Each structure stands twice: as C-alpha cells, then as structure tokens.
Amino acid sequence: MNELFSEKGMRTFTADRRDVHMQDASHYAQLADVVGRALAQQAIQGDKHGALSRKVRAWKVARHLRAMKRHSQKAAAASEALNAGYVNHVLELPQRRANAAAAKLERRKARPAVGSGQAAVNSLQQSLGYFMGNAVTSGSVQDRAPEYLDAQVYEYPMAAGAEGQGPRTVRDFFPRQDGRR
Image (cartoon, rainbow, N blue to C red; front, side, top):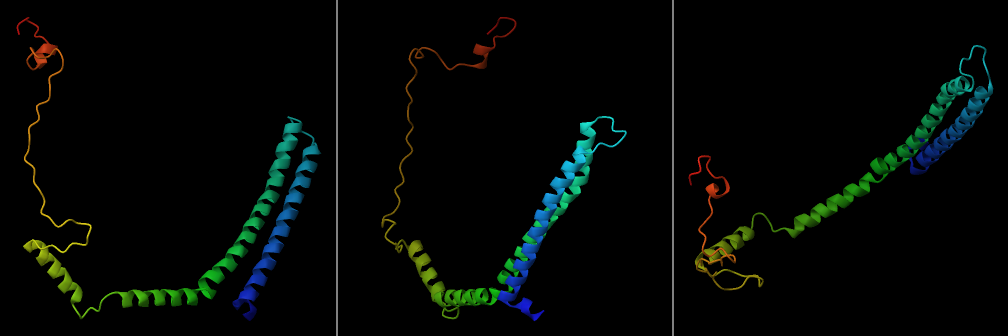
C-alpha cells in the first residue's frame, strides 16, 4: 500500500490498471462482434419480419457488450487521470508553492516601502505641477498649453439646380386633401 505514495509506485499501478482495462475493452469488442453476427444468423420460430427481426435481436443483445467495452475504455482513461492528478496535486505542489512564494517576494521587493511615503510625495508633486502649469513631462507629451480654435460655421454649397427653391416641407410630399397649400 505504501508503494502507491511514490511517483514510481503510482505510475506502475495506474499503467497496470490501464492495460487491464484496455485488454478487457478489446475482448468485449470482439465478443460483441461474434455474438452479434451469430445471433443475426439464428432464426427463431415466430419471427414475423425475417432478417430484420434477427438483426434487431442481435443488436439488442450485443449493445450490452459494446457498453461494457465503452465503460472499460473510460476506466482506462480514469486510471491515467488518477496518475496525472497525483502528480499534479501531490508531487508537483511543493515546487509550485515555492515558485509562487519566490514570485511574491520579488513583487514585494519591487514595490516601495509602505512607511516611506515616497510614492505619495511623488504623486502630490506631479499633481501640483499640473495645477501650476509646470507639468512634468515624460517626453511623449509636448510642453505647451492646448490651443483652442474658434468655432467656424461652414457654408455648404447648394446642390446644382436648387438655388431658386426654398426648403422643402412635409406638404411638398403630402398635399392636403382639399387642394389647398
């Protein structure tokens, strides 16, 4: 039992179970084929539809063997999943935790100390610089105040042939019933 709690022991156990289940699945598939073909050839007195009755009866019996084959294949896959889960959740876990702790320590070293307040001082100085017009630039922003342009009304040209006409109204499209404008 203690052999299961080592990498080699778990790998050996799961490989053995996988092989047994795959061999069983192969046998079930062969047996389903043999039983299905044999029953499809066997006529039973009282069959009303001849070959169709024999094929349906053979399928009904052989489907249980095919289900056994599917379940054996799933059991083989589950044994592989057992090994993968053991490796992932037991064997590799201490190393992953150590890597996470090291990364956390690196992140903690990279940020400024909480008690120094230097980040707050820098932020306040930058804000003050913006308010006073002495903005600290990083090189990508230009050192000049924004220019505000006057709003200009643009006169769009009239369409050809529309110079003498006034604006169109709804009454131009839907005249009144009494003929008045």
